[in-house]
Image (cartoon, rainbow, N blue to C red; front, side, top):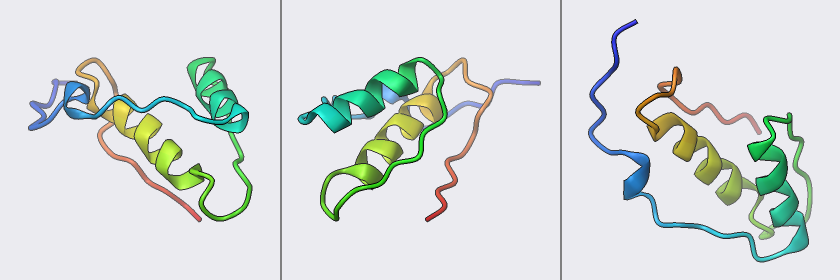
Length: 72
């Protein structure tokens, strides 16, 4: 499979760090490649962090992925 030339890369993303223990857990399990099921009150960052981590993955030059699909 040929590499696609992407207009933006993961270096274009602003660095996001977890600010709660729950968010820290999401980052850690993502790095381990574990499946995630996020739940919590509105405004806790579930969608934001999920999209950020997925975009980092998709924008890497060596990734097999070319899109992010979110299901709510």
